[in-house]
Amino acid sequence: MTRHDNYPDDYLRAVLGKVQSIALVGASPKPDRPSFGVMRFLLAHGYRVFPVNPGQAGKEILGQTVYATLADLPEAVDMIDVFRAPEYLGAVVEEAKSLAIPPKVIWGQLSVRDDEAASRAEAAGMTVVMDRCPAIEIPRLGL
Image (cartoon, rainbow, N blue to C red; front, side, top):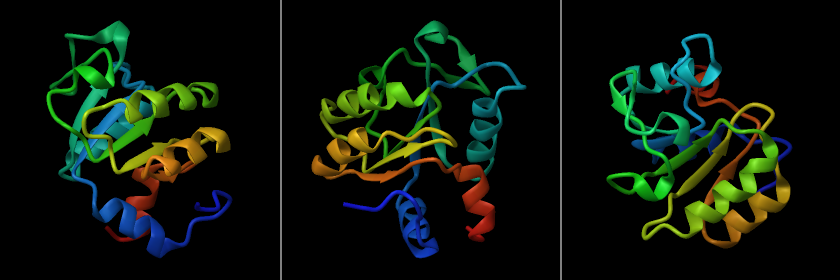
């Protein structure tokens, strides 16, 4: 189990290095929302991003079709990036565990941390990063 108070740069590099497709849970169509900016950043850096937001399902955000749930995604993803309040992380982990092909990584955005949910994800074989933003870490690490 990983300690979630501090992540070595090599750990974050390894996590981000194995990711090509990302489900962005809590994606927003509003340009002023952090999830919109991060999604734009990830798309610009060559990741395939699948926005997940039940209230926007069937619409598009940044040219990508929005899905209601993780189970609705058209393919398995490497990482789930969670833009929901910390109390929802556990439900996202449970949904991820139920997928035919679970993701390799659960990533909780800034302020998204739930150690119990992280333990359950790790017990299911997923790598967990919490309270970090890939749009900050990728440039900082020179990826």
